[in-house]
Length: 190
Image (cartoon, rainbow, N blue to C red; front, side, top):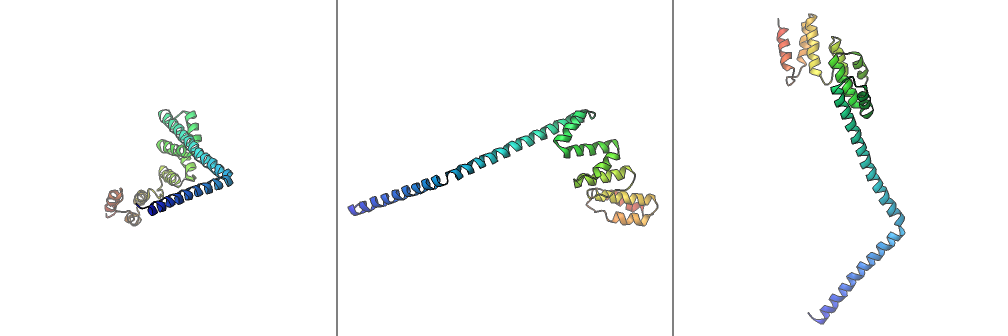
C-alpha cells in the first residue's frame, strides 16, 4: 500500500470515529434534555406490565377458587359456603351450576330466573328447558331442530298432521334429530 492510500485510510477511520463520537454526544444531549420523560416512561411501562401480571395472577386465583368450590358442590350440593364462594368468584359458572341443578331436579322457578339472564346462551337454554318441563314445545336457537321435532310431536298428539308435517319439513337433514324427524314424518302418512 502506498503512503497516499494509508493517509486516506487513516482519514476515513478518524472521520468514522468522529461521527461515532458526534452521535454519542447527540444522544447524551437528548438524554440530558429528556431525562425525566425517559425515566417516567420506563416507570410507567414497568408498572403497566407489572400490574397486568398481578391482575392476571389474581384472576387465575379467583378461577381456581371457583373451580374448587364447584368440585366441593359436586360432592356435596348442600354446601352453602361453597355455593357463596362460587357466586362471588365466578358468577357465570354459578349461573351455569344453578341451571344444571334446576334441570337435574326438574325445577321450573330457577329456570325462570335464569331465562332473564344477560348471557344469551344460558337464557336461551333456560327458556327451552322451562318450556319442556311445563310440557310445552320450547323455542331455542341452540336446540332449534329438537324444538321443531317437539312441536311436530305435540301437533301429532293434537291430531294436526299437516302442521306436524310443516314443522318436520324444517328439520335439517344434517341434524342429529333428523332420524327422529323422518320417523315422525312417516307416522304422519297414515
